Every structure is written in C-alpha cells, then in structure tokens.
Image 1 (cartoon, helix red, strand yellow):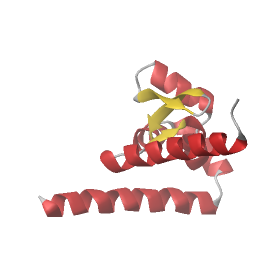
Image 2 (cartoon, one colour):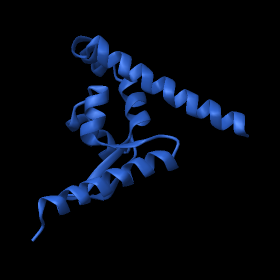
Image 3 (cartoon, helix red, strand yellow):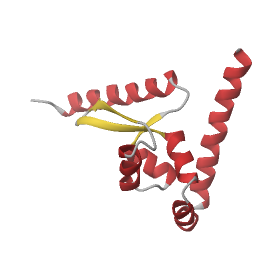
Length: 119
C-alpha cells in the first residue's frame, strides 16, 4: 500500500520529468490544466484542437495514470487565431494574466535568440 511519502515521491518525479521535457525541447509541454490556466482556453477547446490535429499532444505517465500534454506555444498561437477566444480572453483575463502571457512569450524569444547566438 502506498504511503503519503510514496505519493509525494511519485509526484515529485513526475514534475521533474515535465521540467526535463521543457528543457529538452524548444517549446514546453504542459498539462491541459496549466495550458488552460495560462491561456484562458477551456479544456474542451484544447481537447477539440488536439483531436482535430490543430495542436500536437502527447500522453505521458502521470502520478494518477496517463496525462495529456500540449505544447504551450501551439495553444497560444491557436488561441490567437480564434476571434471568439480572443474576445472572451479580453473580457475574462485580468491584466496580471496578460502580463504573465507576455512574459512567457518574451522568455521564449530570449531562448530562441540565445540558441541563434550559439549557432
């Protein structure tokens, strides 16, 4: 039987794996919950997008079984192409959340610039 410390260890290992995915690839893979929180796109829209092939997704083993991940940049780009989501986001997303999104975009640009400078 699993103890709470076993559960904590399993969760910590899984979070470490997610961080490793982010470091190995140019664009971070995040859970649907994190994509929803960071972009304001509903989980049902995210599911529709990956089922229709509009964004990539992958299944990884999570602490409670398979976990769906999506590329955060792809979600941001797809959301930007949706007038309906943009209108809703403008109504619902606070200024703080917009700043967070912009910071993320700047961070991604800095990573790309650093990679180009190394080449």
